[in-house]
Length: 143
Image (cartoon, rainbow, N blue to C red; front, side):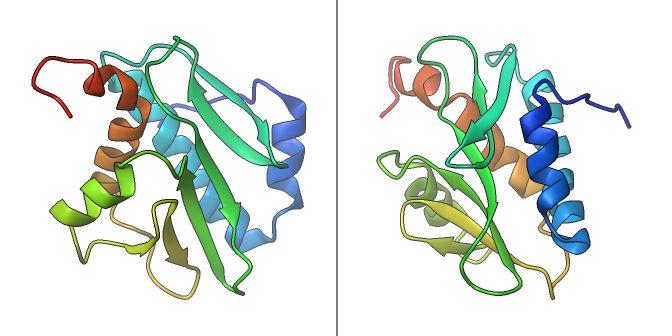
């Protein structure tokens, strides 16, 4: 598996601030985001930064995708993959895969530390949709 160095030391520090199990789960999501971005034709380079104090990932190309944030939730033992709430990403993915994840409104996929890690293949599909959100919307025949 390819190792991805941190582009921003403040992001590395944010990961270090998470508890061991949570850190491991969020680092696995980070790995999947960066791998998916690398494999996806329309994505290109990804900016790794902090938004609202948590790790965030956004394609550098203008209007290509939407930001993905990784963070613990207010609920104990829960963490999530968050997207902009004004996108249709959560609604669309939930329509295709209603039982795949725990969905939180139009903002997040939620995961529980007491359960198995989420399905990586489905998660990669969601991540690809987020990283190409604006590109896909601008194509003829798209929503």
